[in-house]
Image (cartoon, rainbow, N blue to C red; front, side, top):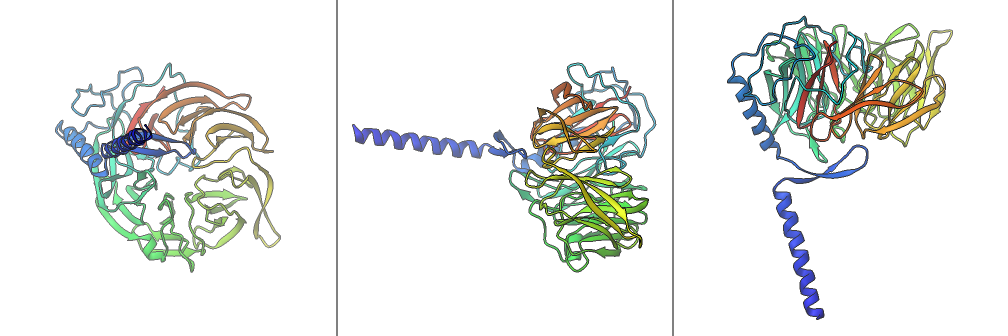
Length: 477
């Protein structure tokens, strides 16, 4: 009997192993969520995904040239996601250059261009939805075009899309593949300025492209140029246009941590600091009346002079892997959050008799630990994901006002007094920005797959994406 029992165990184990191999061969993978959980999903290989996207884009091109920039009325039915589906001609509207940087015009996650609809019923019908390449980048939008950067097979691809129809307008590609854990691809959101798009790949390839055609104007490898090694999760900080320069965080030593290039020629203008880079993006801000570049490194938060990169002030901040953006919370205040291993802090800047700036801690809290997402400030209160749970704290004291609703390592923006949250599970949620209580108005599945890319919005159109799908929704009133 024991002999037969052992044989049955061996047969069972063998069947489990064979079954696991077959499931793996057909694409079953373990998905690690940023909030700490794991799941299982069938995925396509990078090459298979690239072939799927190319087939979709070929079908789009077969329809003829894309329509002029346009906007359907909010009540109109959305075109089918199928590239071959027939669509009605929407009415043309004016376009803008509003959302041209990471997380918006001020890089603070606020949409202030126009009021948006906050009555979503049971959900929203997409203007369009279609496959997209891998990576964690978001969109920037200008002149009726949405720009992003994707992984397609073994190439990184910068792409321009028609904002209203989703039609691909051009691509610019180069060899490059960055893979870590279950998601590969570029991480840094492009930036648009004066008819050019500046794109940064996960391994340091940095290019200036003509926004109308995608033609390359200049390129450099920021890691090679700075003598820096790549980060564990790749280059993720979005470039920042400042006057006649474009600034990147390369993370090199000997004054090559933060580097400014001439935005017209690509020639180096200045370099600053010796710090290893973090994942947060530099911001152009004014604190105490002083215009400065605010950025996080591996060991500190700093303010730099835009013209030279000179260090204006610093605050020690040892948070390796920092991804959350700082928040300018007043003329002299900066809020900074990170993982649960580091308390969030509110800083106050002051100027000495000699004009030298310094930062001191006003308060700290364990109630707003942004893992990968960034918080927003609204009417004196900070709203953000404390781990996987949405929370609200008082910006003057750090006091927790409420916590509620699980969204994983999602992302959020603020519009018309409401939080628009893209959960890690691909759901869109509308939450009232009210310090009294968590009030989720609507939540619905918007795209499939793990979603940790920041939403973007311009001209009343909300754009979302992950490593599998991208979609647009009209919130115009």
